Image 1 (tube, each protein chain N blue to C red):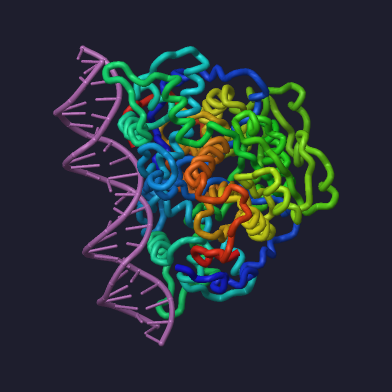
Image 2 (image 1 turned 60 degrees about the vertical axis):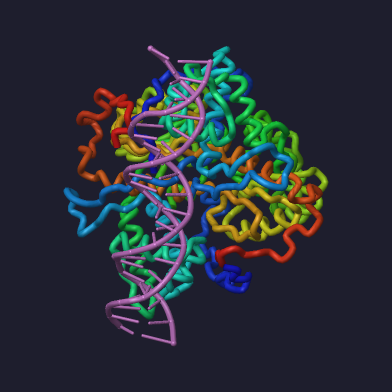
Length: 279
Length: 279
DNA sequence: ACTTGTGAATTCGTTCACAGCA
DNA sequence: TGCTGTGAACGAATTCACAAGT
């Protein structure tokens, strides 16, 4: 994933002097680059015979896990790579290669044991224990994220909330009190926060990020429309709604004219379920 | 693989029998795979001499655009590939290659003309005209998205809102009335919606997607934790918070022990500005 | 007969490094 | 001299295709 570790954009090279307006919310934004750099699972850590897991694979493991969880709930005992791949929207060869990378082992002629594989994937993703999350910026989006219960349910308890707005500090969201951003260092250390979520306006993102890093946070999910500069060793994932929308815009532009505009002429006609894609 | 609709894991193969609770919100989730397939800008359409622009490049163009907009606001006349690249968090060679792909032309020894380049990127991304957006699912996240003003400001006016909940239908959010999902077909056609945003729970995502496609929508941004099956020609971008969090979890797990846990020992110490992507 | 695991081939994307032009 | 544009080298990720288990 190329999350460009070091390349710090001169920090203020681009004065975020965005035009005024209510730009007080992150562009929300979606992902950017997915591909993660191959992380070396090897060596030092007491892990068994793990090998470097490509970043792209890690992202897919999370998708497989979702499907596996559903299968497990259904009481399914085994799955073939073909079925699992279809449900996850990938090609089966890729899925098998991904699973072989995490040392997982299926049974030829049979498939994978659902519960065992689920456990293996969870272990690989480090989901065997919860990760305390700190969410900075309780504005429009941040509030929605904080209120989203699934967060905690999935092993990512929101342990702290921060915001600069004095009007918000002190209020409680989903049982967690909003604290001032200056408290990031102290609070994160106290509560053992390992993942930080930045949902502030662009201008505030870098300073907030710096504080999180100073507090020892090494993994950050950035919803602000900015490229965060972080020291090596800190992982940043970006979710940029503006980028996503613009990529879609590009595709709309590509087929301008290809589709009868009035979206009525032979639209989804027969439907070409592409891959099988379950669910 | 035209595995026709049939191969679909029984549609309900994975009964979203998720634990109860307020699972009425999408996993939010973040991006998944970025790389979009290289789109062929060539041929039929009256476009000039456009060439196939790699999907990865398209995503980055959106990032460049953000930086360019800032520079423009600052009154900057030109930028070098080096500076622009640094601000966008990429390597300059990549940036130049990206720009050369869209036929853009800088001036050797000088750099790129900011306003001209901005216009070129916008044109490539199809941002010269607004794209009406339909947002389905006005729950926690959906509501936040609908309320986010930047949407319209950036050329993506929210032209319609939908939800199944009778309690929400009829209400108005940011000036737009929420309508029942059954109205998707009619309303989207009427208002010329070209981009659909799915922010429903997983279980409702596929049916909603089907309706959007039937209404002629060819570009969808999916926030629901599901792989959507769509006919060829329809572009789906996924934003999956669960995946993002789990990828970060993986990285946290990677360095378990590498970092003194207590996040206090030599944390961000000196910050490693480091230009060359050390890696 | 069926399905995994994986080397080899292939495709895609990034980075290098330098020629070419202002 | 400075910086773009790009061929060529490189590296990563995907897909193929088949040997190997059960």
